[in-house]
Image (cartoon, rainbow, N blue to C red; front, side, top):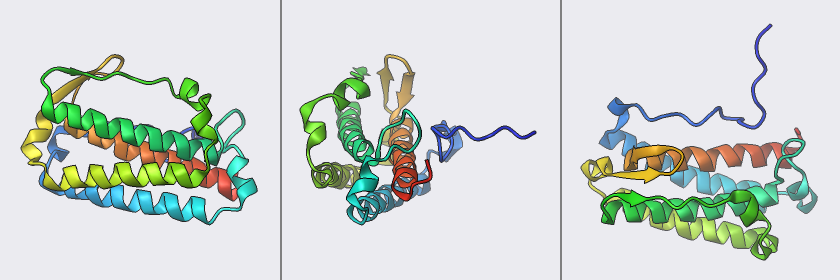
Length: 177
């Protein structure tokens, strides 16, 4: 009997970017993905009935409203990590606790505010990705639980992360939980 997919990962687990994929073409693909994913978030959330935003994508999982707030926060964190990685030697990532952040009062702001944060962070991500020399992305930083990684992997992680939570939000909004 085939193994059932893990509903927590509707697009699959986070992949590691292979060394041979660290190319200018891959950077262009990341840029296109960042553009598309942000537009898809706006289309999904802005067009969703309000009640569907409160439905979790799975039992015990976050709802679409929480997912967009978390994704906006994480995208802003990722942007800062990229900027630190581009400007500091031996940068140590300071992680954040998503569950603790979910309990903060700003998570009750309207989803349009989370979408606005996602948009602004994405504009800045795209400005950096379009201007950076791909060779610069070999610079490394350290995550306390993931270890050393280059900026290519950081970008790949945040590309996957935004698409991953978008897929979860789509399940919640469409009522497939």
